[in-house]
Image (cartoon, rainbow, N blue to C red; front, top):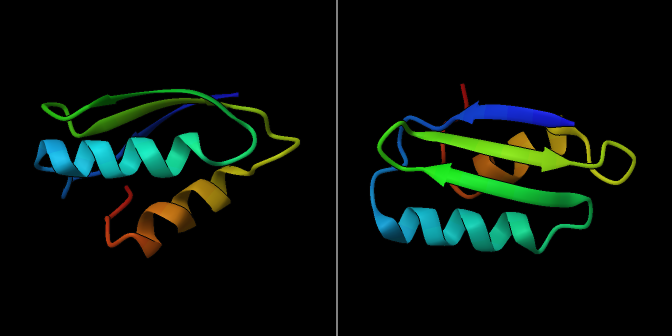
Length: 67
């Protein structure tokens, strides 16, 4: 599955690095492209291993707002 996730409080390259590290370590995440300027994450994932709600919860647990 492919999804675009808006993260309005992603501001720095450290945020990008933290998000990339957290997402890439999760089973089922195939690829992610993080666009800091657009405050978006383009993610490709396998819905069998990880659900979209799990991704949202992961980001929110890290302190990010997901729209």
